[in-house]
Image 1 (cartoon, rainbow, N blue to C red):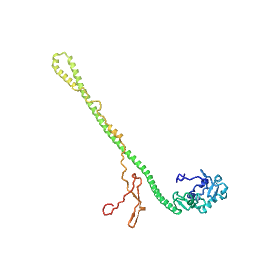
Image 2: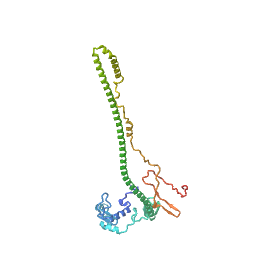
Image 3: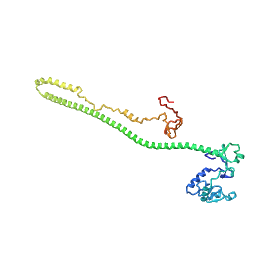
Image 4: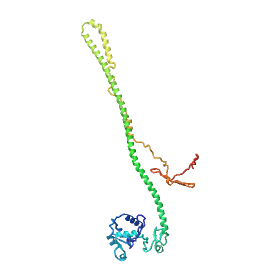
Length: 362
């Protein structure tokens, strides 16, 4: 069974010669081989074709020595065939007109009709006594022209697709360059934005450190002032205590009683002054400041890209193919194609005309 056309063929006593030959492919290969000065190869080797040793003018096949002994033995009807060197066979094949295709089942008959059901050329004997007798047949030349026209039309469509594919490849290559340029630009923008955030954080850090330094200086000033005040007070208290001790040492009762009341009041007054929070620090050693960085850390962890360019569900306008647009009398033919790289599939477009007078489209 052929993997391309899915036709099943029976291998009869003729062997490989019973299979239909691809004469078109043979012609293409011959033209390429004639254009190249390469050595002629055997046409029956299964794997790596060996260099041809002879050519059979009747079979129109090049053989190497092993394939000639196996497939073209010099006996029976094959003994009458003429074997020539490959170079001479190439020249004779080039100069001789191409043989008319003969029927596979009736080798002496030429193809004259085309079986529509089997999709193969047939001879008149196939129509009279063969399996094609009840099939619909058409003239070989008419079907040849019809299929040639269909192949040309299909080839034109394929050529347009190939042209679009080339343009698409050019756009893809341009996209590669554009992606690289946009990547460099985007990386630079990202670095600049992150640097700006770092600069803002450093400025805020400097401001917070300044506040801490001010608080530090304030605490030191309060403590130093309290130290100075307590030092003066303690010096006065010590002087008063020393003076009272010296007064107590005196043995003059009348003199003592003259100043004792004033000293006692002064001592009590001084004692009261030490008891009214004087011995309590006016400032704590701790800094009553707590940096609330949790929201900022959360924002940093949540820092991410935002998809700004969302693909639009509306298809892009078609591209007019001006080289294919034309006008004739009162009619106009417009040709367009869907823009490449479009993510929206379009089944068709509706053409609306403007009368140029500010009216509605129609």
